[in-house]
Length: 438
Image: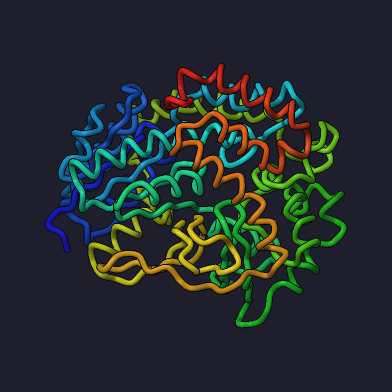
């Protein structure tokens, strides 16, 4: 075990990320004495997170040091772990990711993984993460880089191909969906066992068992026709995944709003969005703006005399740090390079699957071939991801166009000249937030 490990949280001003990860780390007695370095470029948001974390340390009488800085290099210096969750360009850039494609009929309800918005989000974020990776290589080359930033596959691919860092990409969609599936079936989550594999936001539950028996027949029984008409059905707002499940025989690990953007079938027009109960771009932006407003309301909690919550969320990042510090073998789901782990997905792409973690690092599990219908849908998205990665690493505008050309959502709506027009308009409008591209 390291003597008092230092954990740098980059993007700590995001309350859902910064406070959650910091709190989880503080709940492990084995990590007593650690240093948490909170870093963000937004001083106001950073200050709020720092106030919460410091108050928890004080209320619980914990032996932990809390650093606060807007200087990334300062946070990373001497760190044992660097955990990142960022949004390069902020809300201004995200609005462009969603609003420009909508002008051409491409409605995105999330825009953080694929679709035109997801691809441009990736170009911005992967480039920023690569700068963070370079800082780690220079200031703390032995540090473990843990990334929560989307688009996970594109970002991870760039880091894994461009650095020699010890890296893992993390997302909570697999365990989150497993809990939803237990709810759909009316069984205790603790009695469910599963294996999921594929790509981030389109991993598949290739094994789903309840008390040692295949749970898929029960899930199919519960997801009957009532799901389409009964607002009280727990899966009433999960129609995209239900339809995909009934078509391919396996359940996807990300929600319907996300999954609908990675396939060409569900976002044809506004009527389709209503049919499948999925968000349009205006609804997405409204939700994001309300989230910003909630930050202001949460500041009032600091004035309360009531102790702040001190519960462990189950996020994988703190579990990784605990496992590596203590040597306790821990199973997570992570995003890693496909070195034959899933043979019928492209070698060198980024896949999401079970990973064991201990003092020796990350040990991805060999999964084998996915059912061919699942691999086919994954490969459709991997093609666009690969071209987005090339756009970033080559600094090429033409590769950006190629990525949109291969993107399932974009190509289901537009002709080739129209795709070129969207690419050019987004490149021009988002130039202030993008890396240099020629």
